[in-house]
Image (cartoon, rainbow, N blue to C red):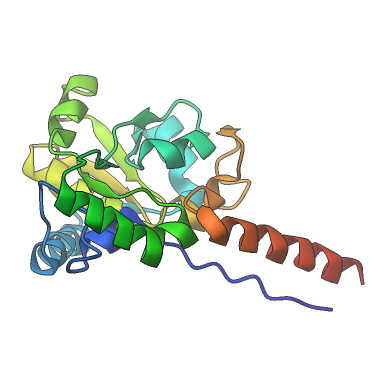
Length: 219
């Protein structure tokens, strides 16, 4: 019995790209136009060579041999599941803890449509993101390899950091989800690095698929 394991991931950026009720950015609201503009800017930076695209399999070499600092911009709950030892953590998205009536309504809709399946929190942009990075890495000539789960949120982070004056930026192409077990040998946490974005009901669906795949290999 052969079973193909295909994973579908969801990130905070996906919510930010959608109009209400999916938008998760309160009080900072990101329209689809703004998100697309940021992603387009990052693509321009990548195509021009201003920002370097680095595959997961080359990331450790970039850190150890070229002096890049691995900057993990995933939210805290994803990083708790799996993280690369020695990486710097500054989240681009944080949990929206506003409990106003409108936000509570949005959270309820978010849970029904997205949160129950993915386990993702209702989030908002971390307005202090660049300033927090500046605290940790004040030298803007430093090499930063920016990473997230899928490579989408890190594209936003790269654009913000470039605008903030950081010029030696790398982007982890495809994010941690595209990594193999051997790409990052020093990982700690309860999950595999490539599965850390998965939560909620989809997590149990994933575990079932992995089990069925293992059974299929033994048949």
